[in-house]
Amino acid sequence: MIQTQSGQETGPAKRDWEPKIVAFLCNWCSYAGADLAGVSRIQYPHNIRVIRVPCSGRVNPVFLLRALQNGADGVLVSGCHPGDCHYISGNLVARRKFALLKELLQYAGIEPERVQFTWVSASEGGRFAAIVEKVVEEVRRLGPNDKLVKKL
Image (cartoon, rainbow, N blue to C red; front, top):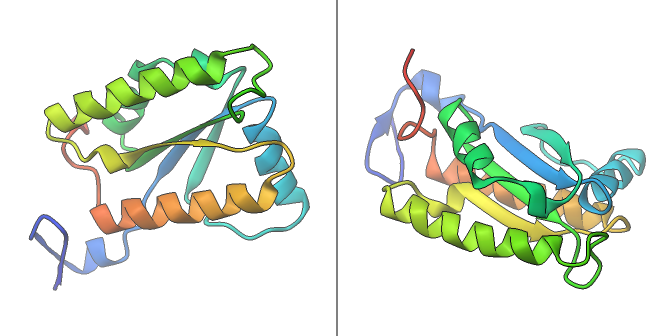
């Protein structure tokens, strides 16, 4: 048996568990960085499912909660670096929303590390791959998301 951080023992089925990560990527920078990683054949974990958004500032925090509720083990939001946003300050708006969401998750008893926020430019394919690897490892360390998932 393997013990998770919360002290629960996991059986053979959970030992083979791989985290599912939903990534909301800004069209102009982060999505282009992910595309560059793919075109450059930079290896990164396959656990990520990408949703392209016009700007990270347009990502509603409810989208992140819904992703967790519908079975995602972690969520990544990535936008342009500060000062490079195609919509002037959309990435800064996203950062403020993200900070509030982290506090809400902590208040609700959900590990705030399940939701990550980063900056990736179009020329940073290697950085994107490294971030995905870091997020997947962090969520793997936390174990499966079972606190917010709705039961059918």
